[in-house]
Amino acid sequence: MNKRLAAWTAAVFLVAAGAGTQAATATPPVTETEAYGVGPQPLGPLPAVVAPPANPQSQDKITLGKMLYFDPRLSKDGTVSCATCHDPAHGWSDAGPTSKGINGQLGGRRAPPVSNAAYNPLQFWDGRAPSLEAQAIGPIANPIEMGFTHDACVACLEGIPAYKETFRAVFGTSPITIDQVGMAIAAYERTVVTTDSPFDRYARGDLAALTPLERQGLEIFNGKGHCSACHWGPNFSDGRFHDLGIVQSGPLAADAGRYDVTKNPKDKGAFKTPTIRDAGRRAPYLHTGGEKTLEDVVRLYNAGGGNNDAHLDPLVVPLGLSKKEIQALAAFMDRGMTSLNAEVADEKGIPADQLPR
Image 1 (spheres, rainbow, N blue to C red):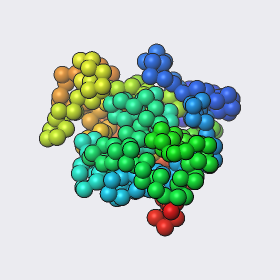
Image 2 (image 1 turned 45 degrees about the vertical axis):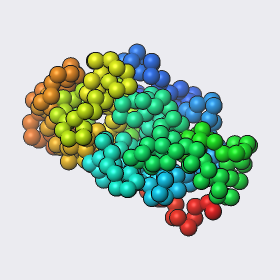
Image 3 (image 1 turned 45 degrees about the horizontal axis):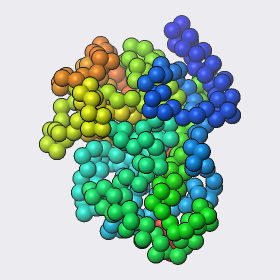
Image 4 (image 1 turned 90 degrees about the horizontal axis):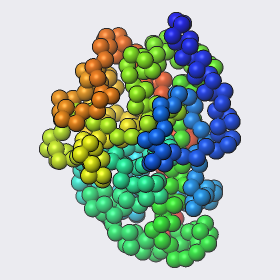
């Protein structure tokens, strides 16, 4: 191990050593305002997820949220559930390149992963939702995604006796509200956390958890590859928005990303930094689904981003990586960052005959 990697490993171990204390003290989530004031944080194991005071976790609420997450009856035609586009088998995203809603309609963006979404200051690629609760109910009323109205969705759930009883037991009130639907789904999503990967094991002291090639990739990630300029902290994401210079065409050509939310010209073409965790299970990549493999993504960054440089983020610069360095970096992001904890890696859906009736 060279001196540079040894020093970095020591830094990771310091983060890992503090992880237990960090989890025990339940570090509050970063808010939108704080996200832009916080500087780069060391890579390391994730802290505990903290639920908002208005929506405390309970096992019954999580169980209800899981049922709702896998229930296609939350869509107008009963064919699309949250899990349709955020499938555990596809790294909590889908097969892409962009997602498909009711009546076979294609969305304009790739489905971002639900895994570790609890750590995002803002939700969706453009950050338009301020919480998981708000995100969870957005697709229900989107005409391209689930195609319902919130009122119609609630009426459907009210017509299912077992759901009506369960909501009353969990929330202590009736009738069901759309806010309760969002709270239950968000409670379940806060359990989808990649707490165990080869990287996490390595950071905790198991030096054999990463292969030599993956260790080289980690060094590149945190150094020459310039990846940790945006993919920093335990979730490997700064929670901010960046323009990679991607040339968009067809229906995506008019997609201005974060700008459509803020109307700030500096945000044109900017999209949220995705987590690297479980990246190997989420091909294809970027908000367009336009890069087929992790090596393709690295080559894009290696070239200094795409050709549309009108609003290119200054953090996106040519890297000068060799072919072998590209392979090493992709290897680390692939197997090295793939979750091994069963509740994320092996989560199974709920069969239709086991959903509330």
